[in-house]
Image (cartoon, rainbow, N blue to C red):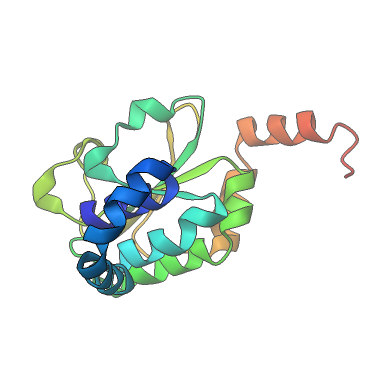
Length: 178
């Protein structure tokens, strides 16, 4: 996962013209290897992360994330599984990424944890068993936990019922119109 995230950061961060010129000669052989590595993600989570990042929805690894950093800023959706190849995990990521722009509008960040041995902050707090979907609000409170994948529509309906989300909707559109 770190290699894919490193590749994504390398693509996003601007490269200076001077460094680009000096590195072009060395990139000849490495470019083919990078293309192969980039076209074949290691796990379904990395594959989904590659697809989602340009749309604005952030997909983060739980081991590298502190849940407290999202307090009052984002609504974390946590997806747990014992392996990245769990069909329920793959389905849940697919459900969310299909409507990524709507999740961005709701200030959502997706946090995935497919390594029980890593004992991430999220895993120690929520203690999932196998696959689990957890939806948190901006105040850090767990609003819903589910042992099976949910559609994007179901997740958004849950989020739209949060008191903080209702307040945000009223502030954005006081008259309820666009």
